Image (cartoon, rainbow, N blue to C red):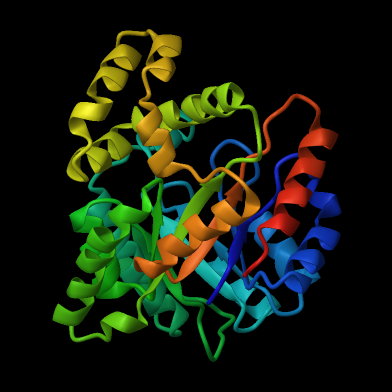
Length: 330
């Protein structure tokens, strides 16, 4: 069983991650996956983990396909693959409207078609061919440095269309912000699409970012959890995802309050039951048991996102390191 961690850890400077990566390997973590929202980008932490680790597999979860030109994305992926042969995975996805449009000034248009075309283009140029794509705006690009084994490509997916796309064209699917009971339905979509495309459905990896909370007083835990949850649940793509999963009535008051500008009220309205479904908290053993439940339901690469709240970076870093040790692979 694979066992992954999200890097960089909260409260720990990137320059201090040499020890983090080596400790994670010694504790049995097999994977380290990065993200890019409003902190570090996805690739610099990945490069450091590849350099400082000896065996840990490193992936991006995710690099959004609108934030970089296709040629730059291909060059970066190939460079990281050359840095640590066989240990890098390229995880890409459409991301969210806020990240793409409000923060990066791009238009999030035709995400399903755009991701499909990006995967096709990346496969083509990583195989040494010349790539051209009208949709991506690329004309005749070819990589001058080539590898015998290009990196596997993972696609981030929420609802049916993107899940099926991942099953059809990717080596793995990345899922996020869902309960263990949601996993079978999500995974079934991707694996069935792989089967229909003539691929081995069981070969499709399923990486899932799982948000793990530290031991906190119940009132604090729920306040922190609700502030975090409301950001996801009010994003149009995640709201649509949870409506598809059958939580439309649960989240509708939250979304309506958020859209009306009542941000604090919206956070307070996140149902406690939803936090219990979507977050992992409790004793270390209870947390590990719930993570294993995700795996029993179809996740092959659990990726722990250790939540370390607080104002003091040093204390947050100590808490994150403590959780890293307590939640090591069983």
